[in-house]
Length: 129
Image (cartoon, rainbow, N blue to C red; front, side):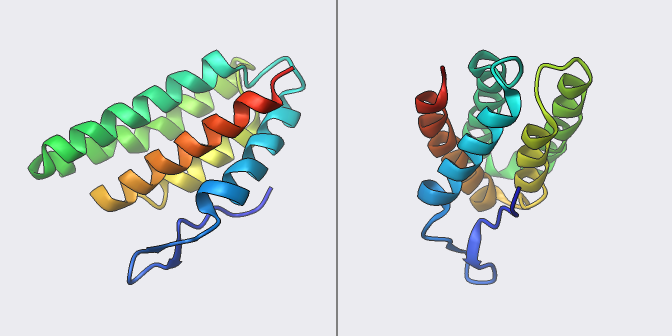
């Protein structure tokens, strides 16, 4: 798969104009294909998406709490890796989570991640058999 970069200009926090369209769609196609109808089921991926949305809402509601929220966001990588070990998701999904989470350093990044994941979910639906 290809790298996820949230920003066209990281310093100015200018979001890549294709992030919520082409890039989200390419990742949806890649992850769906790698699951081969057996893993990366929508219900499984939905659990991760719901958690990302929950942490994003927490971060927006309690900006002062960010330092306590970030470790749990980082833990999504461990959870995805655990799911991989149980064959519920593929390496490609773990990469999707890892590459996204690794870019999350503040609330703005988290909001971008949530938007990216939302776009991904929208595209993912159409690839389901």
